[in-house]
Length: 180
Image 1 (cartoon, rainbow, N blue to C red):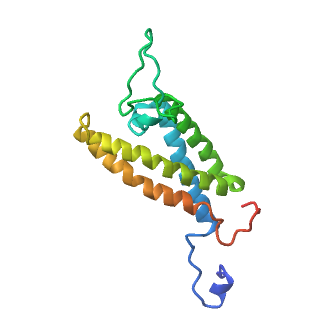
Image 2 (cartoon, one colour):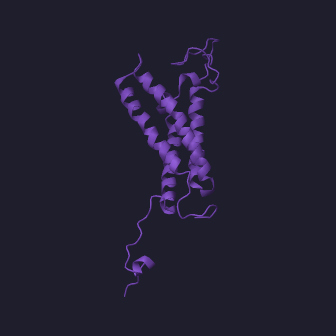
Image 3 (tube, rainbow, N blue to C red):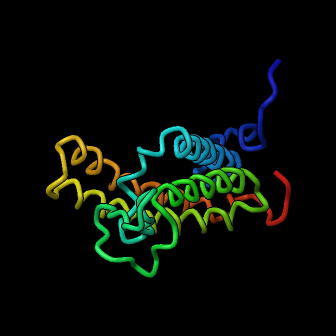
């Protein structure tokens, strides 16, 4: 003898299909975002060169070349910009740490809304670096490989921004402050 799984099934009605806004799918989506962020954060420290092109030159401090008083000239940086407070490698490390913190924050329901809003802002801010990298790839030092890489990386920001934005809202059916 079998028992119906729900009241709707007992009445002969079709079972409700899971909504894309259900708590289970929201948690799965947040977990997937967390895994992606952890992987990216790890890559920032294992292979920082992968991110070098997407740090705009105007954000990079011009440090003296070791052993001299002459400033290094980073590509794309003609003069010291007021926002140039970190070196390129420091920006890469800081963004890796931010992604690591976001990976943890997005997994915790209590911090998910704030983290998702911060991720939306961060991914939007990263657009400037991706545009700068694509422009540089078509410049005098660009290569066909860099053009292909940055032509793919730039449009990938849009789904990341939208994904992070969707994680801001609590799942339908979940109560604010409730543990799920």
